Amino acid sequence: MDAGKIKETKMLETIHAHFSKKKVESGIVLLKQYKSHWPGMADKEVDNAKMLPMHERFFTPIGKEENGLYYPFFQLQSLDQWIDSQQIDSIYTKKAFGIAKQIVQIVTQLHKSKYLHGAINPHHLLIDNKDQVYLSEWTFLTDARKPRLLEKERYLSTGIIHYIAPEQTGRYNVKPGYYTDMYSVGATLYKLFTGLVPFDGNDTLGIIYKHLTFEPIAAFERNPFMGKAISGLIAGLLNKDPQKRLLGSDATQFALEQAQQIFENGDLEKELGIVSGSQQQHFILTHHFPSIFENKVAYFLSHYHQASEGGECFLFFIEGVNGSGKQYAVNHFCERVANRKNLVVDAIFLK
Image (cartoon, rainbow, N blue to C red; front, side, top):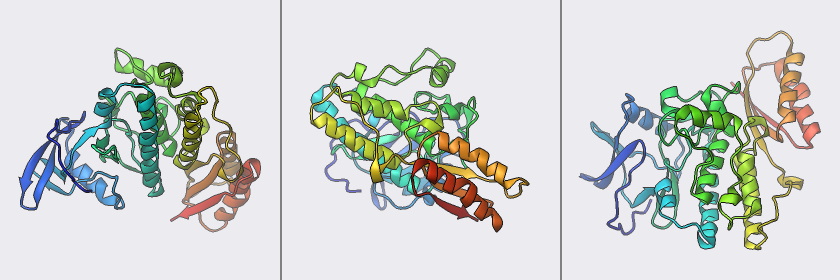
């Protein structure tokens, strides 16, 4: 990251931490100090960040001290702060498309590394004075092959509750997956384009109830400059059923390109069409089959029906299947989905 020229503006502040400028032997750094009372946050963030591949848009710690973590020093603010400082008009909306594309591209890189962020929102996305976006806050990071729910106290915290997916509440009988991050991306894009969260309320339980049962006001009704195409994309990401959600970061990138083109053509009434041909919507389904089960055919068929009813599936991570079980997986699961959806389906067998 190139620090460039540092403007003397307000120091970065997020919902979980505040940052201050500090001089160390190697130069000037940002010192991150956590506001929350959860123990071990700094250690968890350092350990999780070590698992990530190097990427210029992953804002990761470069050192540690007793009081917090060191980060590269350059001028940043949270995306939430940045949005709240803007006036929503046609010029801003055009810029928002560029920000949205960066967010989806960053999430795509994270998912290709087989990790779920678990708490994507405008408080954990940072933006510099050149409108470049970075993803931060790695304490929620989860191996996509072994996803877990957020700790209840953490998802109830201010700022996170507005962006969590229904399945993260523990009240929805679906494990978190890539689709969970995509819901949070949808809620983040809603805030980006409208300046408002999709669901709000006077208490956390009320907000959770809305995530589970309410449909948000269409984004284009809150920003008349954005058009129905991008509004429809956001609505697809906010689908409460993970299997019907719009559906993976690759598909979202393509749909976002389409929506931007419609916006730039000035057709605010045109809705986003169904993606077809070689660039169909893709749904990455991560699933873990048990290592021992008696009726392989019935097991795979039941999960095939779940998969084929929601989204287009093209990549499966399959764990705990050996020997003849692999052939059952291909014959009774992957090929059936491929035939149903007219797609090439790959299965990656994990040891």
